[in-house]
Length: 177
Image (tube, rainbow, N blue to C red; front, side, top):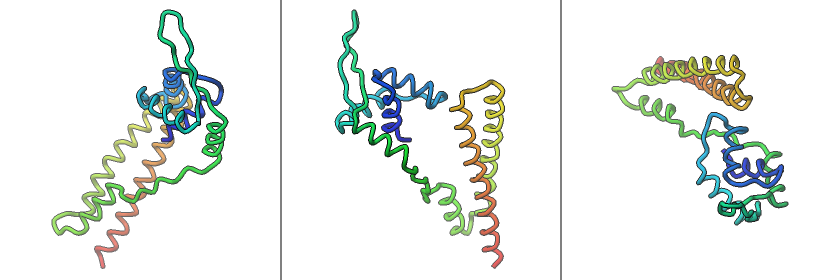
């Protein structure tokens, strides 16, 4: 996740304090997830260093001054570029299930079919849990952010199960040769 760019987006509508950025992020971007406040301030410091955000101190009666961040023109340009460019696909081929399959395939005492069985059972269990969560989210009127993330998780998991099916098919052909 690009916290850097998401924070730029949250600043696009006007100046915001770091703690308020965290609150807006958790409310409007990922309502079912918590963001580390230290990560917010570290990212804001980098954005400031890179000239993407500016800040000013705002005096508060009976409280310490607070730093309010605003988007700079360079930050707005970077945000526009990020929003208009495709996200790199996550095609990390060091997938652990794949590595297990290739390892089991090389060992005379292990079976790729057993690895697939274990992975499929876990995936199907998780798929069922996510389907129930989606039903609850729809029924309870969960925020659109929650429903979209559930859809993404479900589709990824369904694709993983299809991939396991394909692995079973291809590895089964190989063992019959």
